[in-house]
Length: 209
Image (cartoon, rainbow, N blue to C red; front, side):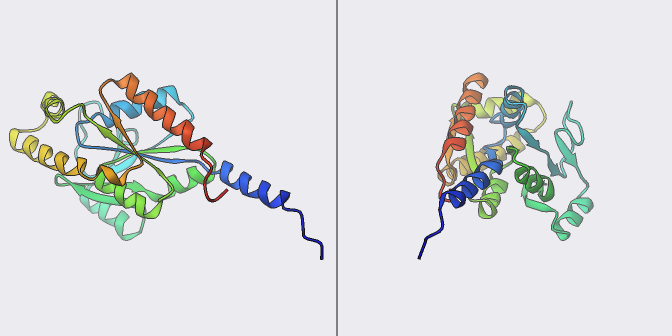
């Protein structure tokens, strides 16, 4: 009995592993600077695809529909849920947020890395469906610094700020569910750390290989 050569099988496995993109999930408490870090990261890594989330909250000054978020009414969002068009969705401080499913799956299958900038509830739901994803928790230097950033927006009243701080403390307690933690003390350093994580993940020898 002659055993067939294994080289081709090994090569096929390597090709499959290398052809699929990475799903990078960046999340953390409200006000930690996820959007700012993500924007800077995309300038440094133009090949990194940004997944635009859908939300029912009102746009803030300077935000554009289809660029920062897909802004939806509650009725439109409900239709997306019923039609299974969302990879995940969650309610946060009275508004819904969700990730359109098709765009993410098609991007990964095409061999491109995609980054999701989402709230903690949504990130944990994504992990249930994509445990092979790379989950990064963005931390503030301190809770006092986080509170100052939220107050600096000038978009929330004190009751909302207090609620956001309570939620933030709870979310930080969920950090153990992530693969990496990055402190956003300086934008440049935070981006360097995340870039290093992405490079390391592409070099990882996975079980699927």
